[in-house]
Length: 293
Image (tube, rainbow, N blue to C red):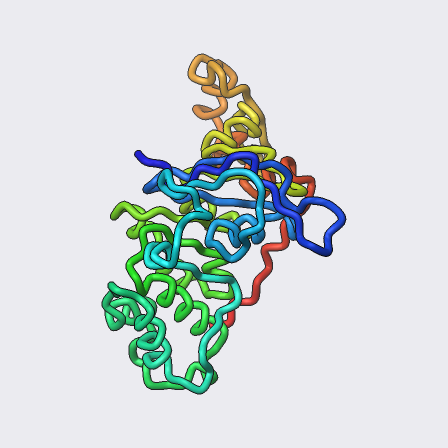
């Protein structure tokens, strides 16, 4: 697989800042993968994303897009990328369909607008002004906009934030389908459930530096406990026992408990991505977003 992005010793300083916001980070984004960039607020995630989509140009270090220097790429670069920012930007006095037709006019090739709007449940509302849309409807329309030019690389910032579980699932299914068809996704989010369900690899950004890059499964193995916890009923009372995962099949006490007690649950010591986030970044997540759909 080719490298969609290859980033070497990337550094960036805002003019008004006392020090670099991005402090020499290195990572690759493989073609056909969903790459998640995670971290607390102010860590440098949005700045990194803005550099990769050419909104910020005065950086140091090297950024290559499919082997080409990003700084040397012209307007044709925007034909190949789709961007969905966290805060949707639309023309509120135009209808949803008028918005999509307007933005589609910027590209040489476009997707089927009706098909995309039907998938996210907005086609029946196509003639409504966007100013009348709920937050969740605007989020879904923003996702359609990001896919209008059938992009080679898709940048998504909090794509399901504010959606109810049903609509969030629709968008995640579409993202997974896009990847399956060969698309590359650069994802930033604080919703660890999205990360676990979608990302092939994740990088944790802390204070402008990357402190961990790995697959979610490998992170769980690294930070989890190799143990098994069994909850069971004995004389009507809930009890529990913990056993080492290694050699569990030969553990006589474990086998005896399974045979003699009323087992209710069995859990491995696998940790959650939220716990890993806290361990790696030292910051607790706030995943409470009001579903406004």
